[in-house]
Image (cartoon, rainbow, N blue to C red; front, side, top):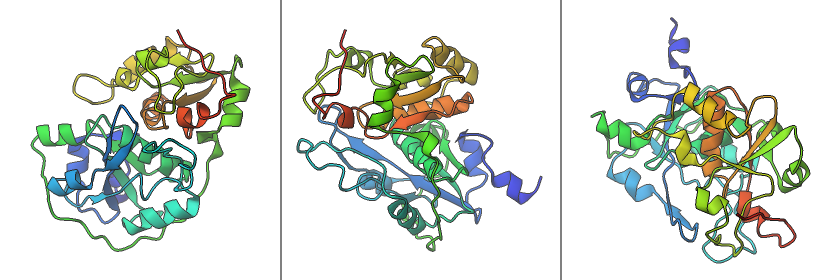
Amino acid sequence: MSSAEEIVPPGHVVDGAWLEARLGHPRLRVIDATVVLDPETWGASSGREIYEAGHVPGATFADLVAELSDPEADAGLPEGVHAYMLPSAERFAEAVARHGVGNDSVVVTYDTSAGMWAARLWWMFRVFDHDDIAVLDGGWQRWTAEGRPVSTEAAEPAPGSFTAGWRPELVADKQEVAARIGDPDAVLVNALWPEQFRGEQPLPIGRAGRIPGSVNVPLTDTLDGTGCLRDRQALSQRFAAEGVTEDRRVITYCGGGIAASLDALALAEVGIDAAVYDGSLVDWASDPDAPLETG
């Protein structure tokens, strides 16, 4: 096996042994994507302090709120609520280049929570047409539980040169979602918890419920007891039970497109390239004319 083949991720997730064996490879870039989320308000703050306390050796810290989202998308939202919508291709390219990422880089990302922030960054890389990207399975918790190396030294890679492409099939907007309601060839997958799916908890933007016709596969249903993705057979069966199959247009959504990215990662592992509704319910429910179901 050549050194080029050895550094290419074998799938959309990699385990700690795979990553540790490749630390220091000149093409490898590791990115900590941790964000601290307030589950009540959906407000978010930087995970930089968590990164500084310990991280995978050589990893940089990417601020998904300040660096890697659209700064204009929060206009009109309640104070503290963040939309998390995609940055422009130019903004994304400039941000990842600061982390040493070029078009020939292999990127592994992780976080300190359930992997949804890492999955969001994975999805963004794929949207901007970079496929040499993987999520560290089990994230920081599993990495440290396995006794793998930890650093407190901030990495300072040389700037990369990244040119962003665009894969529209991986992104859904409000217009497409509205058009897909009732479409037998499409399925809308809500990645929030069941009580939020049923509308039993109000959303921070003041409305509750789900997009009509949605099915519910909470992000936690994609994970096993160790915080890793469930095996492919279990994932395939879980999604298929809700009618989520490769012959349909699959769109995942949640509150702000973060949990939805973890569902999209799980779907990619079973061979289904889902679109993520960018903005999700923050975007949808902010429109008083956009319908919501409860119950």
